[in-house]
Image (tube, rainbow, N blue to C red; front, side, top):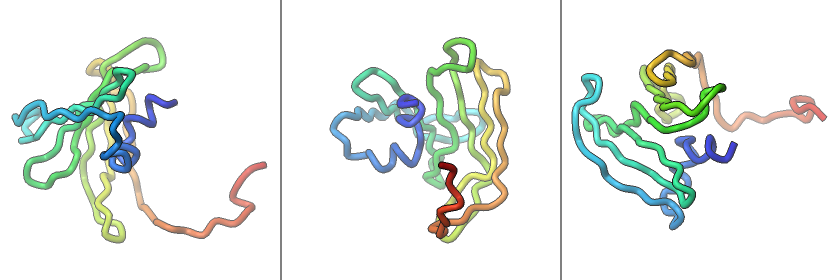
Length: 125
């Protein structure tokens, strides 16, 4: 769970000044037809995530890391596409995850809303 949280983009953005994170610029190159900057973020335990940031839009379009894919350690890659504006926040509608090159998960977000009021009945005791 902690490893997954470490790789979460919003969590990483919130911790960008955390002295326990090491951030290293890897390269600028074409990956799968996209011109990207590659940045590696590593924590003190050695977990890492490589962020592929589109040179033109500055959006994260791909991240790769080592993780569990339900059965064994795998190279996972998450590819984000079809960014849309939701109340001034650009979010990818499509996320495609591969484990060792094979499709593992595909999601399509339909909508997003922020700062909704939730009643007590929303939560299970």
